[in-house]
Length: 562
Image 1 (cartoon, one colour):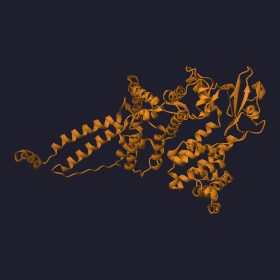
Image 2: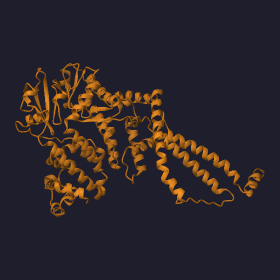
Image 3: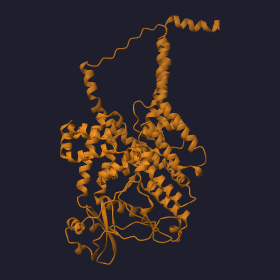
Image 4: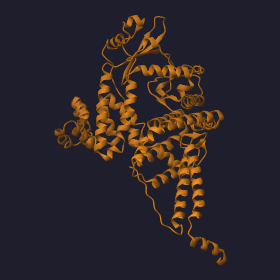
């Protein structure tokens, strides 16, 4: 065990024992074993002799995991909520159970929020607000919200991080990282679930959650993105009244979406609302590359029959240009889709590609065999995630989040009884992306980027090959090849192997669009194809010069006998 790991575990030894006890009591013996071993080998045996009570033993794995995470507190509950979005890692059944995790965090004692505000702003609450309600209107896992009024009479909401929440979260994150590293190196079965990757994703999310300056930046970004769409209402942030532990934004009021009647009561048509909400999210994803990542009904309000308000921008997702390109999968070729899945995921060395190929073929026939309007996105996503889980494949976190957001959007429409197909709304965006990639201006920009990449590659080449040249100069590199083949059999074999390998390599590079690209064409693929053709022709032509006299005589007399 490294000194750094030992130091982390020693600092958090009491918390570590608490975690091991909870996991053991809920029947997660292997996890408890690792936690106990890492923290205090002396307690490992005692913990593992404990048996879960009959009530806990009768629960499913997901139920027991939900109970254990609930007992461990805010950070672990948030981890469970994140894992509920990753059925590719934990399996659909466990993920479904974890969606029920809720953090019931009581409000801070009276005066605590005011002290936090004073520390952040450097002035008294009464100097910043003309009124401030001491009792919070809501209390969530990381922060609580208070009503207040600005000196000009504007009604606002002040979000304040719970006292001590940051320290608790950061301590738990440090411990999680240490445990993930320990498990990854000591248990092949658990290592297959990529605990290090999961903790890395979670660490980024939680650090943003306890620093409200990130949510301020998100609000400012989304406000700018939708400045020309007045029907979309986003809370207005007041940057001079914000800090690391507090966020002040305008108070948005309206009807909560609790069912079909709640929507029609405001004057909205249900289908039109679902269509507008879906298009807003698709604009976020494909137009802006940054999207609100939690589209559940509680984060929507209907001020009237013409406006849609979106709340809580603490959790956002991002889609880069490279990811957008990867989503342009128009082909239903099983082999191509299998290659894409392998490229996107963390494939284990012992992956059964034939098995995966068969499962993807079945998935394609079932879900993409009909019209787009009839596509069951929820079923397709869940079945796809089950394939990932059964093959120990895990999607990158950004793509997994995007898929779940799209599924939740379709679920919102389904819950309201809307006759709107999200997949039909999605199709124009995918077509537009494909058209943009073939636009001459886009091709030109990509060509310039590729030239710069080649320029950097060539600029680094002298430094890269200098050691090799030095070895050559010193005589430390030897390549010896000697073939005695009077009839040229080895030449023919070499021609076939080199030519076939070149063509296969170029086909793979071109079909996958491996960058850098010139327009839609893979530059390495084109180069490999050209090199393969030239090499083949050179070898074929050169082969005649090395034929033995006997071979030449045989070729001359062969037509006579035939």
